[in-house]
Amino acid sequence: MKLLLKNIQIVNPAQSLNQRKDILISNGTIAEIGQIDEKGCDQVIEGNSLICAPGLFDMHVHLREPGREDEETVQTGCNSAAAGGFTGVACMPNTSPAIDNAEVVSSILEKAKNHLVEVIPIGAVSVGREGESLAPIAELYTAGARAFSDDGVAVKSASLLRNALEYLQMYNAPVIEHCEDESLADGAMNESEVSTLLGLPSVPSVAEDLIVMRDILMAEYTGGKVHIAHISSKRAVEIVREAKAKGINVTAEVTPHHFTLTDDSLKSYDTNFKMNPPLRKAADVEAIIEGLIDGTIDCIASDHAPHSIEEKEMEFIYAPNGILGLETELGLALSELVHKNRLTIEQLIEKLAINPRKILNIPVPKIEKGVEANLSIFDPDLVWTVEVSKFKSKSRNSPFNNRLLTGKSVAVINKGKLYYQNQYHSL
Ligand code: DOR
Image (cartoon, rainbow, N blue to C red; front, side, top):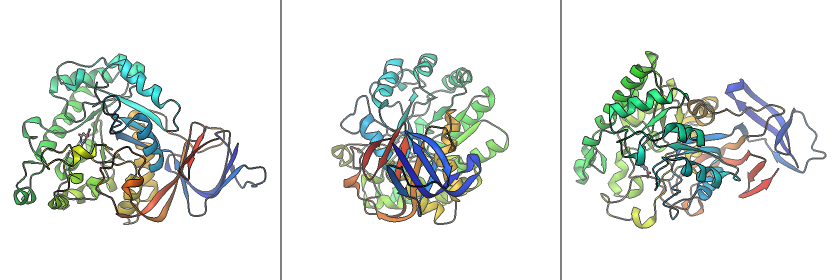
């Protein structure tokens, strides 16, 4: 099978590539890059308006398997990722049972084996994510986990975090931290004048800042690697910036909803705006965008969190936290960051494809002759309307339904497979 990407803009900042050429993919391998004749090719994708980047990678998704297969499965989550333009995801361990033993890691890897999308399981830091004893890190790493987190909650104690950070240096693997001080976390939204207006219990942003600070101090003390998940507060961005300037081993990610929305959206009481960390103020959004621009925030990750319609339709305080992300992430990032001249396309590709893999210490795909094709192809200028009913995810909880976006995935290629025009093709 010979697939030709004709006259496509190839962009990979990791190889200092930004050039318009043809790419020939033969049996899943990049056979040639240059000026290539269409003759003898089985399929041609006209690249005139398209960008070809290394396969995008989302390092923070919830695939819900095992335990909540009614909300998402490894298969439907991977379908959602492919539709959103991703060739890889890392999945969080707040499943039931948690990803705290080798069997769960192996079962997820087995389910993802034949899918175009690569799945990297994130192991729990503590047994059952309960914060008492360290999970079997070596067993989890050997089985295929490449990062560790108790996501949904922060690692419960500084001593447990210390043990994890010391242990994980053996593998150069990070602790991915959900930063929220438990004693302040009893609320359904951000603490602000909006929470007072709505009469909803709230969580102050200092709950996030405290754990960001604690974890950075522990990273400094142990020399371990801390990755701050879904950063959402202005102060947290400042703390990470200062820590990086000191040379402390810390990285950070942000979700598209946290650089796009504020807690004003909650005035609708629509639970599709309820997530953790909660949406915050315009000043926080501005600080996050500054952090993306100056590199304080290394990557963009969706925190794709499928929930059933019945649960999301509960009263605001009882509805679960979380929204879908994989199928709107690229469009939101292009619309809000690139088209508003905040990030260049190269910076965006760093944050969506290169940095997540560097943080997880896994190989970054190259675009060069002889390597297996691992590519994301997107149209940065395609204008489209989000239609949640058409999502490949099993769930529907997105606040972005009907939103007009500029920029959309067109195809992804990985593991000898192509996803194009809603179908999987073997290469
Ligand atoms: O909004 C969220 N949803 N935040 C989390 O920390 C967990 C996630 C989930 O699993 O639904």
